[in-house]
Image 1 (cartoon, rainbow over the protein chains, first blue to last red):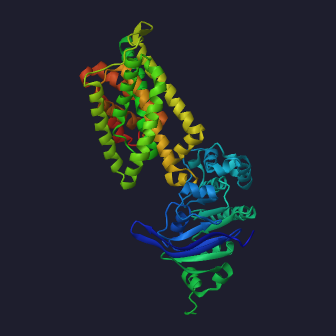
Image 2 (image 1 turned 180 degrees about the vertical axis):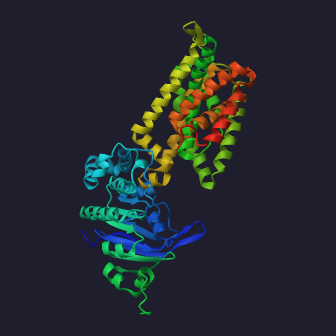
Image 3 (image 1 turned 30 degrees about the horizontal axis):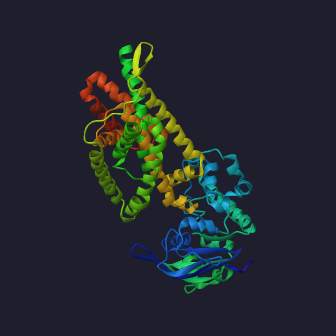
Length: 244
Length: 285
């Protein structure tokens, strides 16, 4: 199973209105991988996530998931195929209970039959959600809301999970807990593509990463390789070897 | 004491009707952020449907709902699918203008079909009354309140307990997140519009039993529905119900203290004050 190409993005261009946000992006995600997108704000990482999810459509290029052409599909069709997104800012349904949020996660017909098992697994992963299942979602703490957003994504029974800015605004101790959860999710065979601001942490957690600048991929490779690259050190760790 | 009790009780029952005719407007705003300017005319269309079913087929208009509710439901689905969904793609103002156009078309079609004369739905129980203590009230007003409560509760149960209802609620709270959860927002919008129209069919019948109506009455009931949802908070079903009751009581009390001519003035002054103090409405998020 591992090493099979799960998601193949070939040379896509994506626009926000008249503004071109992505230029000729090509990415390959293999089954079982944990892959990261790195880059500053507005470098196009979230745009790529939204394009994979079908919220935006490329004007050029092609996207293939599990052998199916998903370039022109709508978001609900993408979810049916097994891609869920845990969006930036969590975007839980604020006025619903924790349980109802999770139930909405299993809305797609692909996940309805496995709903009970999935709910048990989400509760195993995040016991806090079970404790608070009757609470209104907006009253949860930031970390718990993020757990809910991830749990809600898992309820759709995905093959590939897109996770956007998971650790934004959270305390380090909670971020550790969330990354531990991601490892467990991965052990269940779910492939993960995630976006993070913290480059050092990202390279520690991911197998591979793509580095985005102004809507283009400027570098990619295994985390270990990228860690040693001069450009990465200079741009993200503030170490300029030329000056040393 | 009994003097003031009459307008209060009348107001509460009238409020049930106001809530009933406002639920559709509130639902559409909550889900699609769309202010349906044709809402009042849809309600009046519902009244005429009830009137027509009674006049030509002899069915009690409440039984006639078996016909008019699915009819309006289907019409709503088609309007959303073929008209509004396209309008939404153009800009956020376009649906507003389309709705205004629909309003004019319905008004004029009603004039052609039913003449501009004032009509009322007269059933066997239209003139019946009941007593609370020594106070006498029309039975129809009690029906308004009971049906208002029933429909509001059913709608709430639907929105919180069923798959489709939960999807509608989710889309109203965060459209993007709902789409990411596999909810087909176009389909959800179609059903929301259809349900809103089905609600106007119900509201229209009870309105037609309570008040006389003409093809141009829609605008005054649209205004009342606006007031109701503004007081209650746009998009909240429970809030819409309470908003209707408050508006009804304010109207009858306004009439009691200042005379019938100024009763609506009192209502709209209160709407204005609530808007100034609490723009999201009493129960709004």
